[in-house]
Length: 534
Image (cartoon, rainbow, N blue to C red):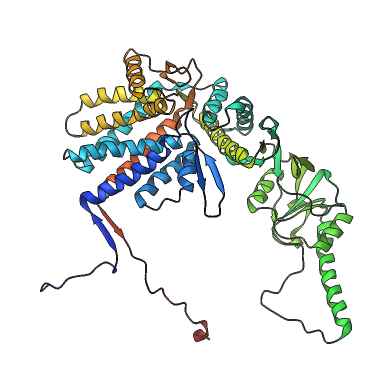
């Protein structure tokens, strides 16, 4: 090519290749894992995060911390995404999966310095992950209704709500058991059928489970009744107000009487809209958009309960609970499109009102009202309750549980080392590093509780070598105990999902050997001049 340089990347693009790229990615991912490591376990610490607007979040939930950190590095984002996936799939174990990913990468870095190729490490890690799931299936036990409360109890531990775990565990188990569906012998739980509303006033002990829907809204007119029995509900996605012009327009008033005529015309339009609602046999209206002041007055006179500016998500929940259709035109308000409920009532909760829709057509709809002294308390409660609901739901669906307290990880490490000794080739080194990485969980539990991690890990290994496969770390007693006896249990899926996700994330990061960061365009494209198109 005559020595002519060939430029294939935009000017200013930063490119990192080879060992430097691998090292940079591993360091970024490990930094994220270290950031959340101190939050693991019952004695884990909290993180305080502030956003640009000054809003403060205090939490030790791994997925929340990584989401709020606004991570920029692409490899570090992979760890954050893994924690988010863990949260969505099983609710609990978000910190575990992040810490495990970081430790797998640490082991891989050691192996790479010894000359082992990343693809060999990935292959060994994949074999170890498959073997781990096989071992976990062997040590897992069948769950029963008695275990569900302890699963919720374990999921809530370390979330800053220890003083009310018994109350919250009962709420979580009762709510989940109420929405279990069984088809062809398989149980399914849709956590979306359980709504969570929070009110930062009162005591956590005031939290309650409601069979129905709770809306953090109020009626739109003071003269409206606060209680409607045998409710016929119109769920509107259209406003009850004068239609505004779609384009900018002006109205010219040329005579004194024209203003009055214009206002009378608007009033007629509102009256027509209200008449359509009344003739439809409606006595409760939930509207996604606005309801005109005059329309509220007329509807209140007709004895109709009205709430507007309802969120779309709440509208969908109301539709599912009451059996009503979401109406997009007032002409569609007919008896067959309406939802039904035994009672729609506005009640005082703390220092404000909330709307309760109970006795719904669909009985599998429940809401949990969380109470607490401050907004920070109820926000933490909300995250903790999400974890507990999901964990209980997963246990019901799979019907399998394992002991907690680091017990499965120590057992897996022991069995994986035995498995590695039967292998030939370099993959056995990766399997051994995988076993070492799993022990970061009991080690971190000990460190966060102020215990000697080396002593605790040595004692746990001894217990498991003697056949005590359920022996885990009791951070309160400061010694290994049988976790089943202490009723510290977790759903099997929490462990299998964490191992699968951590292995996949580490494998993706290890395969990267070239990072190209594109420079911003210094000359942004001009918007087309629409006048040229005319």
